[in-house]
Image 1: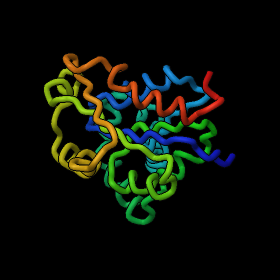
Image 2: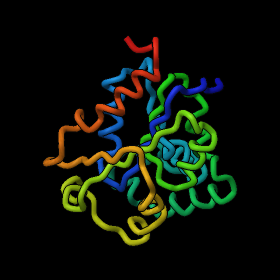
Image 3: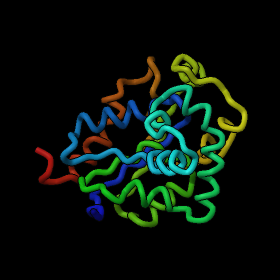
Image 4: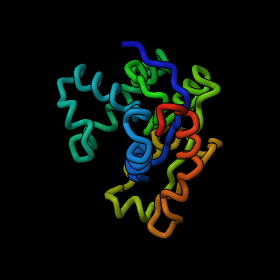
Length: 194
C-alpha cells in the first residue's frame, strides 16, 4: 500500500536516552492514532540487518543489551546502505503511512532531515530532544566510543531545529513545551481531528 500524502511531518532527533520515544509517544497519545503515526527510521534498518545477519529482529527493536551488542556493526552496515542510497530507510519507513500527521521519532543524520525536507518541503518541521549527560546516564546511557562519537549520534549536532524540547526533570512541563507542536499538528490534520 502506497503512503498517503502527509499534511505535516514532525521529524524528531536526539542523542541516545534523551527521550525521543517518550516525547513522540506522548504526542501520539495526545493526537490519537487515527490522525497520527510514528515512523521509526531504525525499524527498516534493523529488520533488514536482522535478516541479512540471522539475528532476532524483535530483540533489535527492544531497549536492551542485545541491541547494544550489535549496535556498532549495525551502524556501519546502515552507513554503507546510506552511501549507496541516502533515502533508502526513509522511503521504507514511510511506505505504509496513511495518517495526515507523520512523526519521525529517530532522525540521526543530515541525510535523514534533507530527505524529508526535499521530498516534503511544505510539511516538514524538525525538533530536537535534549537531556543532559547526567540525566541520560540515569536512564542507562554510558558513553561508548565508536557509537556516541559517530555520525549516528553527532550528525545533527549544530543543526537548526524548529523546536528544542528539554526532557529533564527540572525543565518546563512536557505538555507546555509541546503546545505549539500539538496545535500545529491538530490544525494540519484538519477535519480528521475532533
